[in-house]
Image (cartoon, rainbow, N blue to C red; front, side):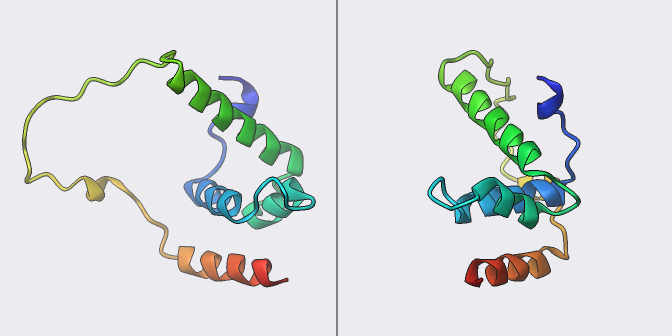
Length: 105
């Protein structure tokens, strides 16, 4: 993984990036600039485009079996709550509203 793919983004920035990618497809004029504005934190269009390319490369490696699948213990422990592993940002609803407002512009 190159420097452009390094995990220097916060979870909040990653989520904003994912949401913005879903909202602004490749037909969006100045797509990378728009997404960089949504991500915020001084993110540049080049950083956004580079991060996107890293994701595309990762998907290609997964689809061609270049990435080994993780080993999962075959315990059928249905009492485990996997959702407890996720840390959702309480302020994200404000960011979602900001994205909706940007989309209306």
